[in-house]
Length: 134
Image (cartoon, rainbow, N blue to C red; front, side, top):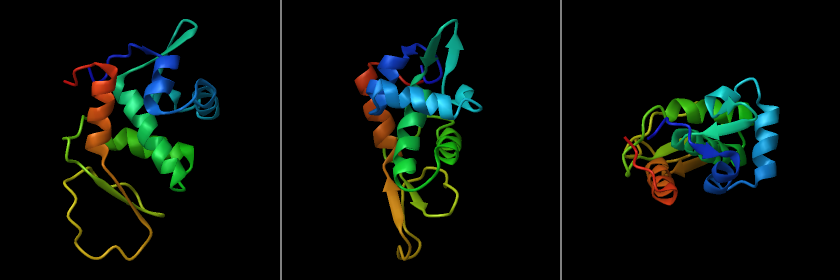
């Protein structure tokens, strides 16, 4: 299930390509918005497939120059629903993220631009997690 929080922090870190320590730092530094990508149940923190995909996309965006807070916010909005496998997003420095689409450039890419195969990322994580996205 896309939004069912069933993965532990260790599993989530592994699936989204972070170490457990990196994930703990991200949670601590972004605790004001941690509910966007996890839920605390007792002493444990649980993640859904959507949460893991948000963290994975945010990690990519952060490496492209966005702050973690903006990267998480953008990724959360883009991944409201699971995108189709062919969905791509183009990210230009200093601009907000578009909705995932089958990418067709309207004009040449004259600015630093990152093309992210968000659909492929989501579907590969789904397969890796062994979870059916609904």
